[in-house]
Amino acid sequence: MRLKRVIRLAGAGLIVMIAMAKASGQTCDGVPDHFFFSQNTGQSYSIVLDSAVVGCGLRPCDEVGVFDGSLCVGAAVYAGTWPLAVSAWANDTQTPSMDGYSCGDTMIFKVWLKATNLESVASVHLGTGETGDGTFCNGPYSKLWLEAPLSNCDDVTDMRPGIIPTGYSLSQNYPNPFNSGTEIRFALPRAGWVALVIYDVLGQEVSQLVLQELEPGVKSVPWDGRDSRGDPLPSGVYLCRLRAGTFTSVRKMILLK
Ligand SMILES: [Ca+2]
Image (cartoon, rainbow, N blue to C red):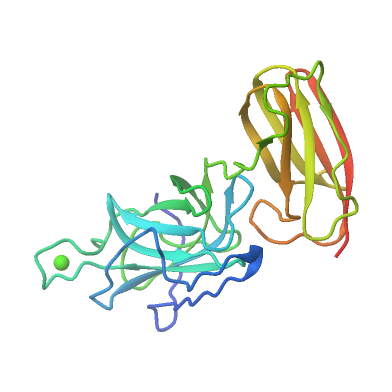
C-alpha cells in the first residue's frame, strides 16, 4: 500500500516496548513467543498500531508480527492497552542471509491469538488523523490499525450435549448485573450461522462474541466486559443480540465496576 503523507519521527528509530500484561489473569514478559525475528542491524522502521479488530478483541499476550514476504522482521506483544508500537528491522547487508526487510518493500501484518493458537494475515488501515508510509524504510513511521478475519470467540460451550432444543431462545445473562464476567446462554434447534453481538446503549457495536456456524444445542458463552479491541468497557447498560436463522432476540445486561 502507498500512503499519501509521510511523517518524520524526530530521532527516528526504535520505540522500545516492554509489556507486562496482567489483565485477564494472563502474564507475559513482552517478548514474543510466536513470531521470531532478528534485530542485528540497529536499523528499524517504527510502526504505531492504534487498534486491531479481531473477533472478540485482542487479549493480553496475543501478538502482532510484521513481515517482508514470508520473513518476520518484527513483532510485539499486546499488553492490554493501545497504542502498540512495533519495530521492523532492516536486513544486515554485512551478512549473506536475508535477516530483515529490504528498503521499499511493503509490510505484511499477522495477528496471533495465544488462547487458540490461531494466526492470520491482517488487513492494514490508516490510523485516524495521521498517516505514514506503508513501505519499509528507515526513518518514517506508520500509524495504522489492523483487521484480522479471526474468531477468538472459541468459548462456546455445549451445555447439554446430545439435547436438541425445540426452539430458539436467548436467556438472561448470569450473573446480572455483573462485574468481571458474565455468561450468556442460548438455544439453537438447528445448525446454522449464529451472531451474538454486544452493543452499548447508543447502539454502537462493542464486541462480537460469536460469529460462526454452530451445531444445534444449548450453548454458553462467557463475556468479560471488554470491547472488540480487548479494552475494558465502562459501567453501564449493554445489549446482547442473538441472531440465528430468522430468529432475533435482545437482552439487557448491566456492567457494574
Ligand atoms: Ca543479512
